[in-house]
Length: 202
Image 1 (tube, rainbow, N blue to C red):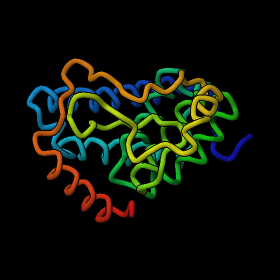
Image 2 (image 1 turned 30 degrees about the vertical axis):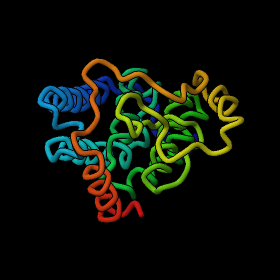
Image 3 (image 1 turned 90 degrees about the vertical axis):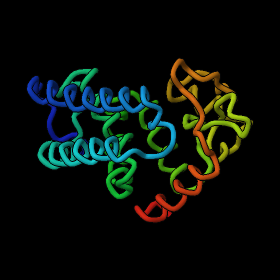
Image 4 (image 1 turned 60 degrees about the vertical axis):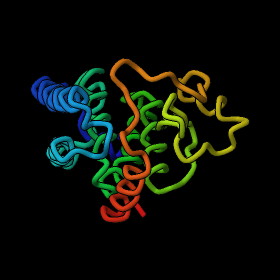
């Protein structure tokens, strides 16, 4: 058995917990989006949820490995991935989880695209080009979303994406309903850069 996948016995109670944890994340995000504060920086209310969920998942992984499909089902395994993906204030946790997610995907316990998204997110926060182009931010005009930082070897990015089950890269994405650019892009970017250094991404 792979090191990161120590437990595969079905655990419906754990599955329910994971789904409840990500549901809390979604509720807080929706509330912050509704009042506009979600788009102007990393809101403390959101950060608290992310820290709490990361601490919970850290205990789950320590006890039995990453909770993959055979242990908690498809939806809850996806919830576990999203908890990792959202733990942006904890670089050490996200970096440590990447090899475990790779092992889970190799064992068929998690979709490979999830690993690609986590790898890209880590790259972006470290200030490096993405491999798959999954992380987006507003363009300078504030009218569309484009890949953050840049994309490594852009001429063959679609081949890399296809290998993990992602569609061809849309280099410009129309905002979804409710998405809006930050009120002060320069201030938000400066705050984000200071935050990335403060928490240990750079």
